[in-house]
Image (cartoon, rainbow, N blue to C red; front, top):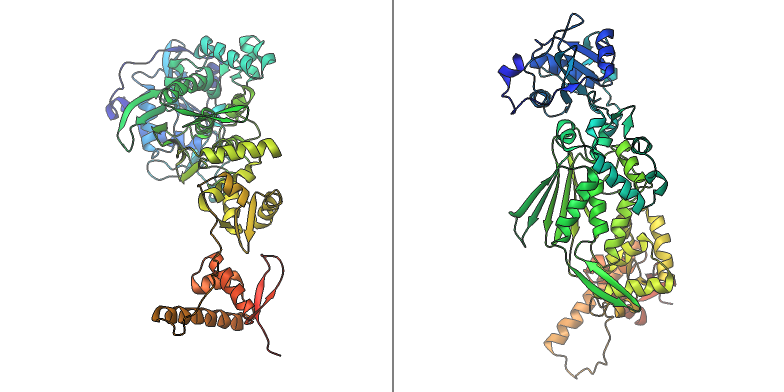
Length: 570
C-alpha cells in the first residue's frame, strides 16, 4: 500500500467504528458534488489532488476502498498517517478528519475535507476543483477566497452519540444552572444538545465534541484542540512547569483556573464600606482572554493555544490571525467577527461569553479601574498574542476611581482609558487620546468634554492633564508641571557675566518668537514649543512676558484658540 511505503505507522491501528447509514447511500450514488469514491490503490499525491479539489469547491467526503462502485476494502490505512500526509502535501494548509470504518464487512477509510477559506494548490502546483464528476482547473475568475467556513459546524462522517461524554453533558447542565439557563438545564440530554446547536440529527458536530466530547473523540477528530500551560519564574524564559490540557472547553477552563489561581496573589483595599480584592491577574480577565483564544482560533491549523504564566504577565497565543478586518488598531470598535460561529453561539447560550462581543471591553475595564495597563495585542499573519501585564498595584488610582464612581456613577470605558493614559503619561494631546480610544477626533472631543466639566481633566492649549483634584488624590503619582514664577529681581549696578549670558538668551528667544509671528502672521504656544524646544509652561511664560512688555498682543480667550500677534506701534 502506497501510504505504508511512504509513511511510518503511528502506533496501533485505531478502533473500527460501525458505519453510519448515509455511507451506504453515498457509495450507491457514486461520485457527487460533495463526495469522491477512490480505490484502495490511490497514491498519496492522487489523494492530495482530490482533497485539494474538494477543499477548493465546497468541501466534502473522500471514501477510500471503493472500486468500480463496489466495496473492495482498504487495508493498512491509518487515519493519522493520512491526516499527516495530506497536511504535509498541501504545505500545512489543509487539515482533514480521517476515520476507519467498515461497510459490508470490509474496512474503508472516510476522509472529511473542509471547505478552504483560501485557494489551495496540489503538490505539483496545480489549482484544481472538483465539479462532481472529475477534477478540473479552477478558472481565474473563481480564484477569489471563499467566505470563511464555520469549522465548528462540521460533522465528521463517522461521529456518533458514542463520542459524547455524559459526564461533560452533566457539567454543561451545571453551568446552566449556576448562570442563567435554568430552562435549558431542565431539558433531557438530547434536547439540550440540540438546543445548544451541538447535534446534526444523531451526530455531534465539532462544536459538540469541543464542548462535551470524550477523550477518544477529541484525539480522533481534534488532536490540535490542546492548550499548553507554561509557568515561568521571575525573569526566566525557561519554564519551571508545563501541562498540556486536552479536554472539552468547560473542563479545560476549570483546570486552567486551578493552575493560575495556585500561583495568583491578591491585595485587599478598603474604600469606605467596601472591600476590594485586587489580584495579580483578575480571574474574569484571564478567563475572557482564554475563551477568546479558544473561540477565535483557527482549528484547521495543527498548532495549539499556548499560555505562558510569568510573575509579571500572562501571554496567551492562538493560531490564526485576526479575521474580518479586525486589527490591533480597531479591536475596541470593530463589529465582532466569529471564526467559529456555532461554537461561539453555544458558549453564549451557556453564559460563558456575550453575543454582543463585549469581552474585550470587559478586560479593558477591569484592568484599567485598578490602575493596570490595558491588554496588549500583537498580531502576526498566522497567530494573535494577548499580553496581560501585572505592574505594581496603584492603590491611589484605585481609590480615586472607586470614590469618584460612588459620587458620579460607573465610569464609561472611554473615561477609564483617558484617565489611565493621563495617569501614566502626565499629559497627552487629542491626537494621542484619539489613537488610544480608537475614535475619530470629533468623537474624542465629545468624550473629553464631560470629563472636563466634571473637574477630572484640565487643558492648556493642546495638552490635557488630570485636574488638580485628581493629582492631589493620586498623591505622589504625578505632579503638574509648575508654572515658572518670576521672582523680584534686584539688578546690581554692573551685571555679572552669567547675567549677561541669560539676558542674551532671553533676547534670542524673543527674537525667534517675533520671527515666527512675522512668518505665520501670529504665533501660538505650540509654535513656540516647536521653535525653541520648550515645554508647555515655559512657552506660556515666555508669551505672557512678551505680552506684558508690549511686544505681543493676545488674540482669543480660550486656551485652545489663543494666539499672539506683533503689537503695532501707534
